[in-house]
Image 1 (cartoon, rainbow, N blue to C red):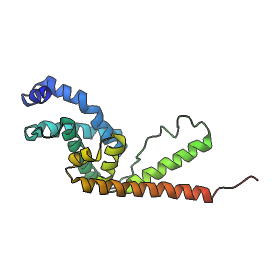
Image 2: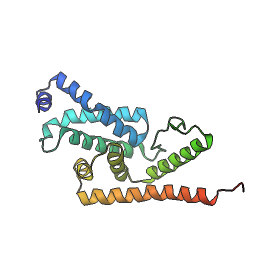
Image 3: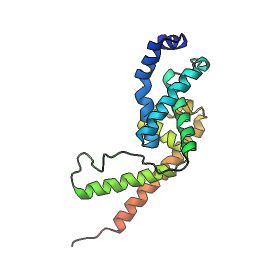
Image 4: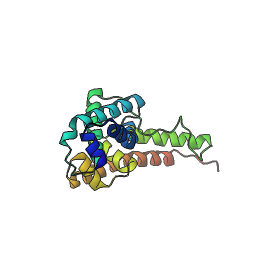
Length: 186
């Protein structure tokens, strides 16, 4: 509440505190959404500009963090519309290196898995993608996501379920192809 009051009074220190407390989570969501640092940084700036501009409309019914998540998701959806369709990578695996998997075949399989998940994420409608990011990476509850998305809980649950089914299907198809294409040295 002190932070909110400082923000409403226009104190620079309060805005700096807001950025310090919430900047990383906003960047994390934006980066997960676009897998692009430049776009993520632009989103962070956009979110704080919007938050500053819309502060008078924040009534305190939700937590400040939830309100900022909502602004972030909306900014990502707006940015996505402006970008159009562009190849996105959903998961960063640091140039194919996976901890604990030094074997080149394991790295290749992991890269193929990540590529398949990325492709499935690319195919999701933006709202489903946002819900998966908030649930899986930000570990928000479905109720919290409903508040962030300003959507009924049932709608969020349905979108979450449909998104998981699509991503799981893509991964399952990869596993089935791997099993059928396997050869034996016996």
